[in-house]
Length: 301
Image (tube, rainbow, N blue to C red; front, side, top):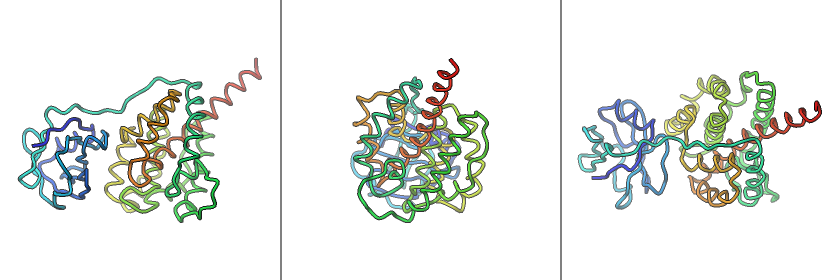
C-alpha cells in the first residue's frame, strides 16, 4: 500500500474518469501510467509535485514494476499488477503556487539569475541560446534549428507585448515540437517554459495563440509523454520546481535563486534548464517592455 501525499489537477481528472490502464514507462523513481482517459505519472516525493504527478513516499525503487502491468481503479485509488495499491483519497490536490511581483522585482530577479546561469548552463539542450557559453563547444543539430526560431519568437513577444495586440506566433515555432532526443525533447520543454511564463503573466491570449499554431503538429510531432506535459503547460502548470524557480525570479528573491537553480538542474538530462530557458525568454520580453514603457513616460514627463 502506497498513500499518495499529493496529486496534480490533471492527474486527478485522469484517474476519476478512468476504469483501467497500464504501466507505460518505468524508471527508478517514477512510473508513467496510461489510463483509458489519459496519462499521469507516479513519482517519489523527492521528484516533486506537478499537475500530472501522483507523489508517494517510496519504500524502494519503482523499476521492480514491469512495463505494461495492468492497472485497475478501486474506490480509494488504483491497483498496479494486482499487488501495488496506491491510495489517493487523502492526498492534497496540488496547484501551481502564485507569487506577487512587479516590474521592479522582475528586473531585479533577472539581473540576479543571469550570472548564475551563464556559469552553469549545460552544453546539451537549448539553454545556450538564452545564456551563451564562452567556450567553443560545437553546436548540436537541435541548437542550430532552434536559434533562429527562438530569435523570431523573441521578436514576436516584443511586438505583441508592446502593442498589447495579440497575433499568432511565427509558424517556425512548430520546428520546436519534438526537437531533440528523449521522452520530453528540448524543444517541447522550451515551449512548456514559455507557456507557463505567459500564464503567470496573465497573457492567456498569447497562450491560446501559441496553442492554435502548434496543436495541429502535436499528435505526429512528439510523443505521448511530452504531449502530456505540453497539455498541462497550456493550462498554466508544470513541475513544482519550475514554478518555484520562476516565482523567485518574478519576485526578485535573489537569496533563493542559487538553491532553486540547483533543484531545477536536476530535472531530467537537461529538461529543467530547457523549461527555464523558455520561461526566461518570456520574462525578458516582459522586462524589456516594462523598461520601454517607463522610458516613454519619462520622456513625456
